[in-house]
Image 1 (cartoon, helix red, strand yellow):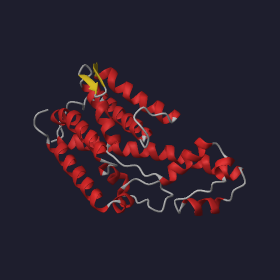
Image 2 (cartoon, rainbow, N blue to C red):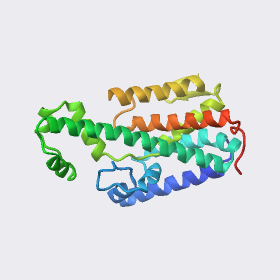
Image 3 (cartoon, rainbow, N blue to C red):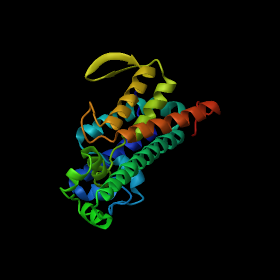
Length: 247
């Protein structure tokens, strides 16, 4: 992992440039390049890709870029630049798809609950399109349903984490006995146990709403990236493409 490989280097540079631009321009960057819910007025098709280069803060980009370097470099050394790019963006797009599908479920669940409670759909859409909500909704439907509904519509997704989770899965399948550690749990754990455990923790957090890593995390995007990463690795292994370089 000494030399930074070409694809990893270019991804690092683009992410850093986006982060600097975000610090300079703020909300304008988030409005344009984060992944918004498709029914939100801020949504644009290019956000399916550009959200992978957006980050919410310094620690967010630091952890993601460290993981990209640490786990992506050995994969690119084996696969070559083009195959790594294909895998990385496919995992990121898969993460965006799963995240958006889950948000559609939350949005439709919340909307139906509000309609059943007697509220008008046009009025609901008018309120949330302004980034607001009616306090009467709090007493009309379950709090978790309301939070998921508002979060799905109003909160954009940012970060390379979905693609990174795909990379983690690939690394774990190719180097299952490599020993990894969490910063707050300095105990070496083999990748074949560590990475599935991390994904299950994200799945648990996504389903229950309880996150040991804090709030504001798109857990289902992580799970989506991992699923698509696993599917690609399984397909490549089955068709004996895993060790072929795409130079």
